[in-house]
Amino acid sequence: MRLSRKERTARDLLHINRVETINTETASLTIGWQVRFQRRGEYHSKFFSDAIYGTSDKALAAAREYRNRFLEEHNEELGQLLAERTFILPHLPKNNTSGILGVNRSIQRERSGNTYYVWQSTYRDMEGKVRNASFRTRRHGEIGALMEAIQFRRNGIEAIAKLPENEHAVSVITAQVQSYDALVSYLAALRGDEVESVSSYLARTDVPPSTKKRFIEVRVTQAQFRNEVRAFFDNRCAVTGARSLLVASHIKPWAICSDKDRIDKYNGILLSAAYDAAFDIGLITFNEAGRIRIAAAFEVDADLLGIKDDAAVTDYTVMHDRYMQYHRDHIFRSLDTNSA
Image (cartoon, rainbow, N blue to C red):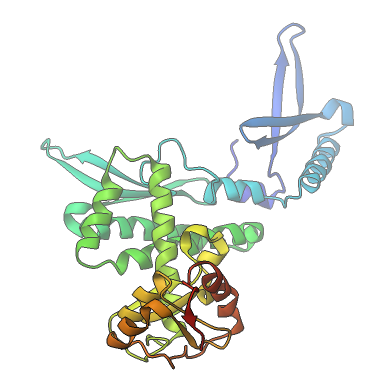
């Protein structure tokens, strides 16, 4: 009898199976418990025979002891690998086309012969049953159908994380839920031409899913960064206090940042258009106290553009200056400058 994952967890049988085999040469029956693990496509197993250990219970006890020791040696908790394989895959499945784990776009056919596109989502619950749903682009729109599909999987696996028997899976499932929330938030905020641009890109069949995955990760990360920088400076220019024509820029450029630095709100500054443009190409920078420094060759134009030589960043911190030091040393046109 095949047990569900819930039943296997309750009976302490994760990674352990009851096995009965017949030796074709001797026609003898061998019964026992098999411990089995999969690592990077390779299987590791060990069999514990009832006959060798005396009883089924003793063989099972030996199998559990071996399993627990194996997990300890690999620095894993019981059920962790199963949860990670189900919810946090290191690579997208071969049949994925969207770049989003558990979500795909496909074409379906009505009885009349007409075809239509859907975004569909799938997950496996703790009973081992596959749950799926599809959402028509014709009804919800391309982005709307995609968001519905993501939300379906997100809600399904979040419900699993709330079950008490899955305490070891909570962290990996929570991480996946948070990634879906960030993606939905990004998609919901798209406006104008961005909606068509992003939806068309994700619908393309000539773009590898790994490329789409990276595209999504970069866009979501940038959106999160912008939102946090805006919130830190209260949606005002850090220098002028203006609320319009604002740009949230990295202090240390994105291209040379670590992944951690790319999302650090302290590596961001919110500036109005003229200040941002000048800062981006190194015509201005800020000193250790957050006071402006203007390149000498830019002084006349700076005044004409309303960039003041006594300007300073509001709420400037030492955390910002960790990144600003790089800007001063490598981007600011420091030769022949006036220092504040």
